[in-house]
Image (cartoon, rainbow, N blue to C red):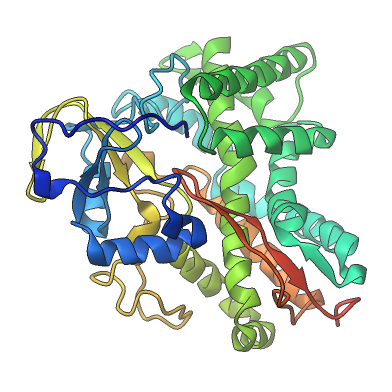
Amino acid sequence: MPLDTSIERPKHVKAEQVFDLDIFLDQDLLKDPHKGYRALQQRAPEIFYTCRNGGHWVVTRFDTMASILRDAEHFSSKELTIPKSNSDNVMLPLNLDPPEHAGYRAALMKHVNRKFVDALEPELRKRANELIDEVIASGECDFSERLGAAFPVSVFMDFMAMPRERFAEFRGIVHEYFSPISNARYLELQNTIISVIREMIAVRRAKPGQDLMSKLMEESVRGRPLNDAEIESYGFLLFLGGLDTVANALTFAFRHLAEDAPLQARLVAEPARIPDFVEESLRCFGVVHQTRIVKKDIDIGGVHMREGDMVSCALPAAGLDDRKNPDPERFDIDRPRREHIAFSTGAHTCIGNVLARAEMKVFTEEWLKRIPSFRIPKDGRLVWRAGQVMSLQSLPLEWTRGGK
């Protein structure tokens, strides 16, 4: 997200409620964002105000985040960026509040439901093995782009009938979009994305297919067909979600697995536990911050939030909340109970969560069948991105050439 200059403390914010944090450039977050947010929980107020990036509240505890994300009376999704972008571009259904969003959400959900994901599984396995084929003989790769991104992003691009040869172009757009850039550049990239979606719509209008864009063109909301502007808005959301978030979640998971040889051996011996590995990874290594704008003054957690204030719910910190998950920094697939909101909660729970979980599960299964032992090289350098959508942009791995 774009950066902005710091502001002075607003009058309704008490001095003791201010904590200096730049969610994009804080050095602890850039070293390891998940450790950084866990440390932040322990040293900062549970809800605090930072004057960085236009000024906004940050929420670090699970229960308060869940309360905010489920409260459409006081908190709106109409502005989702920090600092405020004041963009006219809309992402359907994410930028709409209940109940207005419901029809748009339903129109999309029917195309990414569990039935669809179950039917897609053979294709997921095929694609995972195609990508593993490309690297297995070399005994090394940078997982982040070569596999962590290439697997879910290529699946998404096929689902959208996007040409795979534009992979690098589209990944470059989302990398820059979620980086600390100026608001002007941020808006330029939005328009670039929408231009891409507009091109896709024109192609699909002329030659409909079985892809998601073609299916959305046949949808109706409130008794009328979707218009092109609405389909563009869906495409805008799907572009950003499909080209980045699952890639980050998968790479975070494999970073941990690469450093945990006993867990690798256990999952090879007990592949039925891989879904627990996926859930524990989502708990420990969340990706996205959910942002809301206050639409009605409210007192919550001892602070007064005023209409127009921006609020960042740090979802990666929610799973690391020791009040919900004892010993939260311990990665444990045997937890009797785990709680996270990696896919948010409430009316805007991520529509793609079933597909994301399936992709992470399938890729891990196929990888461990063929490369049961792997690690980060001793001289391997990890490169992180903080901000509203966090990522590990470089994850070098090595293994015995040829796998098993």
